[in-house]
Length: 216
Image (cartoon, rainbow, N blue to C red; front, side):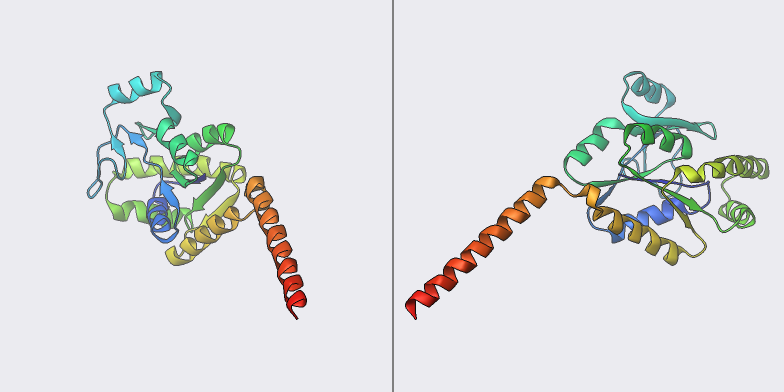
């Protein structure tokens, strides 16, 4: 499980979408949210867009692995879909805020936690203004919250600075590929089968050599 968090405007969504497109065997976890779809977003692909009544009913039924209120809107990761994907042996990418990441960390200690930083707060402020989604007051509120969120960076396994999108993507790809081959993630049963197959091949090789000597 790869968990990615970032301040609003740091480029998290863009990087996560590109990572899914370039790395095989990595599936995006689709969150539920009470906010309205933005231009170009598709229900069921980017988010499951629901009203607050529906969201809170799911919350009461314990259907979320994590959930959080972010800038007045509710977000949550569906438990059933996430665990089904993990059972398939498919790697999962969660794109969630620091509140949600903290909840997931308590439940899935084997997860890989990545924090994406913008080059600076000034650059972040410029990006928020350029995308034109928020008022000046809202942008200031977000920047103020970013200063608090960034303090949690040491709780993550990796920090990627999104100064250049291509470089940041390469670093994310490197993290995923390296984590997949860590010794602690290797299934012991696979290694036992490997050793067994190696011994069988060696025995077959000895037998073949003996037969050749006998014929000669």
